[in-house]
Length: 247
Image 1 (tube, rainbow, N blue to C red):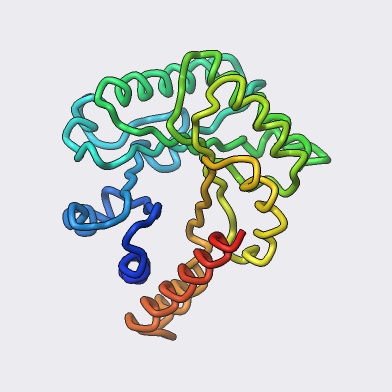
Image 2 (image 1 turned 45 degrees about the vertical axis):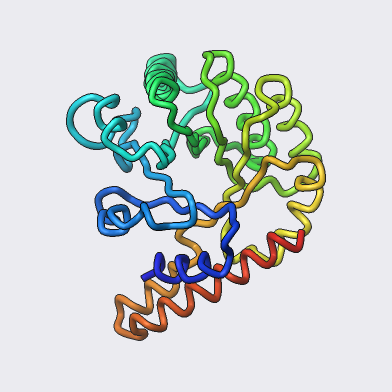
């Protein structure tokens, strides 16, 4: 239902840079119809909630990705910290390098969604995450891994973006950076992203469950119907796109 709302909005934007992530297990019907979409489709490759990284499906990673249409990009949730224990660190980097190599061989675009484990949070969590995020990205580059996009939590100041941008420019100035935001913070987006967009043309915005979660809660409790879910999703996507385009 949420996808129907998104799809409806996409039809009003014939030349767009829209994309959507679709779960391969629960969104199989959507993926089967994806050849007709006028937006990009991304599909996760990792097994949900499993650490260290484990791939979805049976058989080799190469075979699984080979069976997907080449137009789908590959998304991986990558939990990493430069100070995690050596075994976990090595395992995570080895798996990510393997995925990166397969994507390069098959000419698939790779999005790395970088998550800093909460175990490493300290008193000034925002500062720690800013520093560790930059350090983690730098270490991934040192391993010879070059994503097509990084997907990271939104940075709430120009200063934080500048520090991150220095590392990115030094390693891969062409890489795209997709900022994850919470829909409830939509009013803060102009302040957060105005400076970023003025200094980079290769950034984007991602919004996940937050755009539909309260609607979903009403739906499963019988307090709304299919048409209202679709309509609300459509309205929210429109609002988000307007905020982004006005930056």
